Image: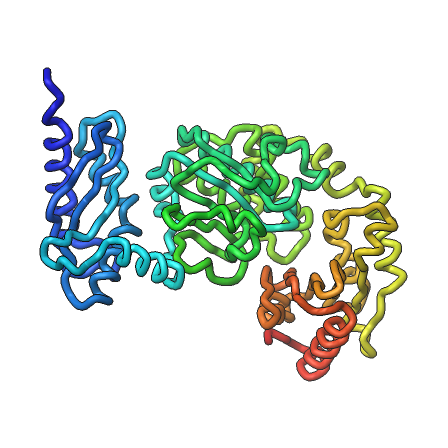
Length: 451
């Protein structure tokens, strides 16, 4: 049977279905009055270019087009339910210029990109996040600079989740190397560090961090046409122009991925369980930190039942200290100073200290906790002078002092009891300023500080 007219027939069916969906009303409030004028299919039926007439003033028309583009994944899935094709075409919306010849396409999309870059993140619930992910075929996964156990574990756990969904085109990249203590996680050897180029993909998923400025040079590889999806459990908002799921009630991003497996009806493999357990146990401090919840223990039970070797994980992650880290710890402990009332403990290290110890930035991980564990200390601060004009600050605090809110003024963030920031200022002056500010807060509001 001839297939010459098939693209036209498929296009007409898609036009009808999309028009019906729009008539019923889409959830995105940005979409105003829209008419579907026509659909042009690619010869291989992989792409459907949908031409729409947009009504209202210029701002309203642009808003409608942005809303349609954001809803394209959901619309594609709905259209796929009525098509009898091997692959559901990717839906692309274009303004129809038959009603307005001055509506130049390139100018429109330039404005759309600007608006997308400034519009707030569109928040999804967890089922909505899973459905959004199902609509894409190729992915770029990344996480924050200086990755910790949750960053690496949740990134790799998400990779296993995507494979369980049947996705095969998945690239994992990071700005910084996988720390040695997490190098044995299944899939860690496939993570590409700071590549100059990455495979073309439809969606970029950023996990365990909400800000694109914190994924380092990987941010330069993200393109306008790619959907940016955020999965995070820290306090704060996602990047403009993105969609995603952020829930600070989770103790770790790995917990979110574990729940994604369950909601999607997928079995967690032993390899995924290993990754997610490391993500969870590191961000809860072995289930000792205040962010640990009953849900944390329920998830841990499921992961342990899949054969996670707790003793081996604990030995590698918590109980083994490389000699370079011990040398840095010696410096941190020797330099600890206290506020007059003993409620603030702070110390510092420099890039020279790292060089002399033969250490790397990963060896700084959790050194601040030694100061926080001192009796009577409510807030601990560790300052790392990584360069003449760059200082990294790590804070740990009791539940009454919101470390994340405090560091928001310096462009940082994180958890209420554990937060950090990288600040373009010299170590000494910045250290004095932050120490004085925290000391004053502890003095002025000794019973509860949530600045």
